[in-house]
Structures are given as structure tokens and as C-alpha cells.
Length: 147
Image (cartoon, rainbow, N blue to C red):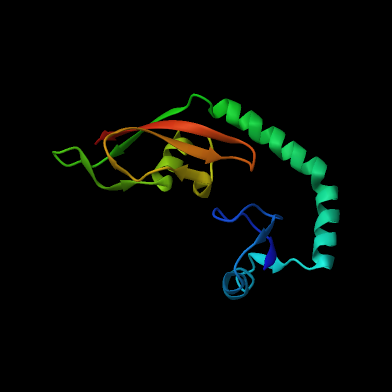
């Protein structure tokens, strides 16, 4: 089943992408939640027209995201966590803690745009990817230290 996404979904794609999903996932979850619509011929024509009209705006958004990424380049964060005597963290460090640390550094980021490769459960140095735009992302280094 082909659908048009109405918002960004990490595992599927970005807003206004036409993707193929299983019928049950589309009809039972994506469409009722308002995250997608069925990709009929008329919906595809409307989408093409809307994209044509938004092309300039999207180019400006990408340019702004690239400028923001240049400012964030080389940013290193230090995140404090409660640690056991063996060096393991009680709990884990996730996107919420990283977003708070980035905000303290003077940048405003949505926590949903932060992607971690693995769970952070020990003291050490790690990197996270911040997706600022569908084509622009920046790696942010962070270090987990004992409080």
C-alpha cells in the first residue's frame, strides 16, 4: 500500500514522502493517527503542486540548517550521571539529557531529532547525531562523567 506521510517518522521517512507499507500498518495505525494519507492519483497531484510552491521555502530552511550545523560543529558536551563503583551508570543517558546539555550550551534542539547509535550505560566518550534537516545532520561529541 502506498501512502503519503504527513509528518516525519524515523523508521519510514520524512514529511511528504511517498512510501510503501503493509496494509495493516497503514490502515490501522498511520492513517487513523493522522500521520499519513492514502497515495491516490489526485493526492499525488496535490502533493506535487504543494512541493513546487514550497521549493523556495525548503531551500531557505536547508540553508538555515546548514548555518546552524556550522555553529554546532565541534561542540563537546559534558553530562553528569550517578555512577556505581564499577563505572556503570544508574539508568542510562538518553536524548533528553543530551538535549538539556545542548540547551545549556546555548542551542535549542528538539530532543526527537537526536539519534544515539547505542545505549549509553557507562562513563566515557560518545557521539550523537543531531538531524537538523532531512539532508543536514551534525555529530555532537559528549562525555559522560561521574557526579
